[in-house]
Length: 141
Image 1: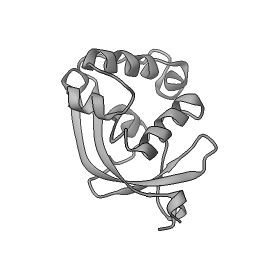
Image 2: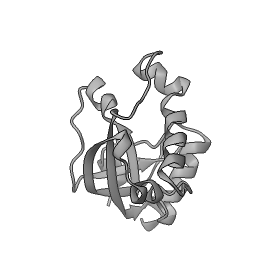
Image 3: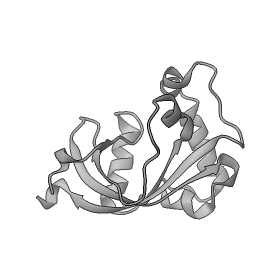
C-alpha cells in the first residue's frame, strides 16, 4: 500500500497534540475522532463516507499510517456518546471531560482563525463523529 496515493487526513494542528493523537492511532488506542461539520461546509467539501481510506500525517506532514472509516455520523454536540469519547483515545472518562477538551480546541486561536474570530460551539453544533480502523502503517512497508 502506497500511503502517498491516499487522501491525507490531519489530526489537530502540527505539534504536541497531533503527535499525541497520531501515536494513539498507531498504538490502537484511538479508533474514533470528531470534526465540526461547519469546517466541511466552509470548505465546500463533502463529508467523508464509510470505506474511505485516508493517510494519517504526522507533524512534519509525512504519511505514517492508513486508516479506513468504518462509521460516519453527524450528531449534535450534546448527543456525543461516552463510547465515542472514550474511543478517541485521549484518556477522557466522561462526555463532559471529552467536551471540555474539544471545546478548548474548537475555541482556540487556530480554529477561530479558520472559522472566524467569533466562532463558538453549543449543544446544537453539528459534529462529524467518525470511527476508523488502522489498516497499514509506514513501518509495514
